[in-house]
Length: 287
Image (spheres, one colour):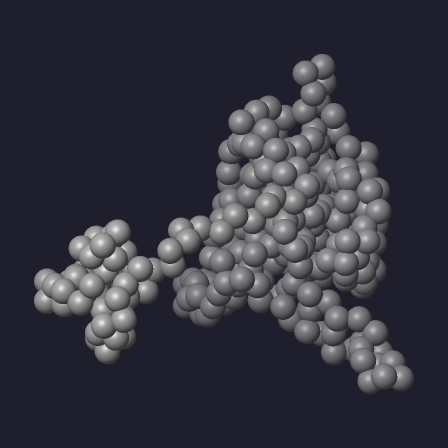
């Protein structure tokens, strides 16, 4: 509540009456002319700042957000995480990607038959690295260590109100073009809310890629019952030393989060070593 004169003075001086809403000296706490003038003269710290009288807006949690919150809390509380990070030179991988995309057939609508992404290549590289280091493709139970017989890669996809992880099944046995096509279809279905339970429940290993958001480094939370998740950051041009010479290369930071109950540090390191070999020598993924 404020007098017309107090409102006019406040408007002329670009002063928000919200700043003195609880200090009016008029009847029933009404803001009067002197209240505004005194606030302006005293150099009110919030001079010219307009505060929203409603301090926050409550957005009701969706069922999917509740499930995500519960699973992440359980994982962080019950799974003994440890983290391994390294930087990878992806120059050759980018060359292979560009080469593959350049020879894609063009359909009747002038669109290429496929468009390989960096993430598609990372999915394939992870799948092949898991074949090399099967102990990273595992799950913990109190009775035994469960080694998955299939390589099913869960890929985090942001959807409205949360996150979902559609699965590229048997990714080690699929071509990069097949992985790319399947991933695009799964991501589309995820955003439209059309995924079937078998398309996002399960999986043996997860990938979370935030490179497209300009993130330089992060660690992800393990997605139980899986034992590992790979956090992928953006590629950045950096000077590196090669045979005693300085050159500029596209370097990408990755961090493996692992469940220490079933994946030891040496196993995690062996997985990253194998992954580095496939990503820095992508021709191996085509053999």
